[in-house]
Length: 458
Ligand code: ZN
Picture 1: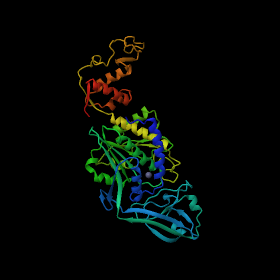
Picture 2: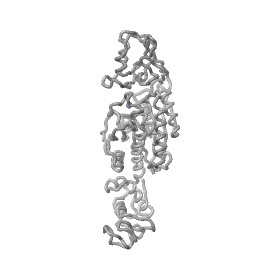
Picture 3: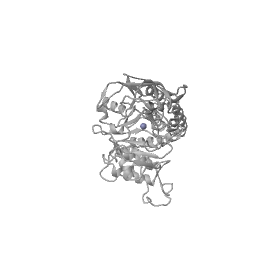
Picture 4: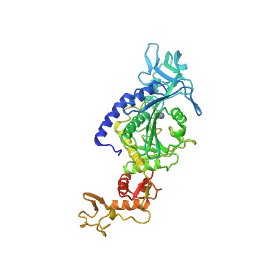
């Protein structure tokens, strides 16, 4: 249903590389043209709506700030050399810096410079969204090489004016009455794993789910982190109150281990589905318990909304040394790693899609599978590890219709399904009681539906 075909892999790899290159250089922030440009490029992958909320709009405890845009910024020495240049790397400017044009001594300038002494090659990522300020980020190496005795021309060509907060949204309507949230954030500038990778995977996932008729509904949103999620919750309060669970997609294409940050419930369906996904796909991962610091799950899971939200990562934010530095760049991530994480997300969502609850049409006693063509015609050889002459096939297969074989394990699964299906226990819950992959269990359930033994209720 949501598995990736071989030819799809190749295309996705190509697309991921292409969009990484297109999107990485853009200077994004929580508002402004960088976000608009990013969303419009992502629309080349898949269609979704772009919406705006004006500056000054109150959203619970927050207010949408003025819109920030930037053209250029630099620190020039007296000979006119750009010692620090926004054009070379947009991380050089503290995101949301106020406009400035001044001649400053190194001492005056120094108060506004940020470095990482322990990573002398890396430029840190810093922001000042709600405190009007300005600053430059540079590598410790750059700072060390600056002449401390001279004056510098410091210019930031930015604007901070009433405008809008921009976000993306798409809704896929299913039939189950259950809804899941798929959220990611589009406010980080040139940082690859956090979160160019996340927004790319978000678009790939939306494209894939848009192509099938889904059982559940999916609310895809791409918002600036924190303020965007809060503004979205405020604008969609009654709808968001009923969401059953979700994911925040971030940091998904690093070279390190898979990670899973669980929901605040710890053992919600979302958490159990992700754990079973890693088990079924035989992939190692590190589980990180829920913590209030992180991303937008903090708002989605806040007391009023309480949406259980998990995050599947590959090199989780906070955990890799390049996090929020210029070394989190296109050399750090890869299309291959992004597709590996996409596969995990698709498998987990497919499990949610197959998580149907059935009512039993034969709850009184063991159903007679034989008269429905679901059991071998000649009995007695079940669990006997030897060829079954009567069925004309080997000892592990049974003929139901010519050419269709049901291994012994499937008979077991049918019997277990008929035993557990009671109108309350979902298919996923049953898959956790008996060790059979969800996909196989779902296929068998469909045979029981066809035979009129069970019927889907949710
Ligand atoms: Zn971040």
